[in-house]
Image 1 (spheres, helix red, strand yellow):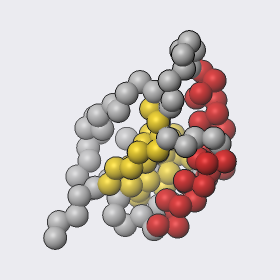
Image 2 (tube, helix red, strand yellow):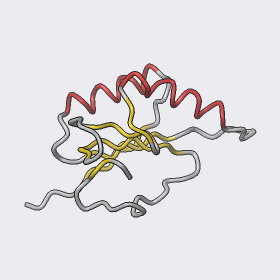
Image 3 (tube, rainbow, N blue to C red):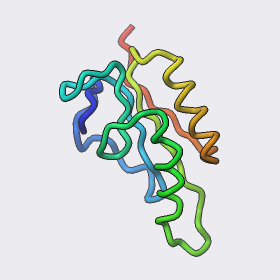
Image 4 (cartoon, rainbow, N blue to C red):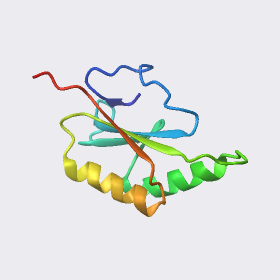
Length: 107
């Protein structure tokens, strides 16, 4: 994992299912971006989200082709504007099935 999320270590992101793709939003110690967007294993821009999900759907050769799920992992410091922009890009790409996961907040 290239994006740092508090309380989430590499390998601890359980696979939702084989028809899911991950969008991880947080900070990075590798590149200077705040917040950074990671699609699977590379850093991305908002404009990369649509082509990524369209090509991901085309790569899958399941005959009944079950619906693909986009899973957004974000830390609590991620501005809501960024998450809204990611959701808008997913809508434009035709990706309507979205699951959200956030890091826990200690009250």
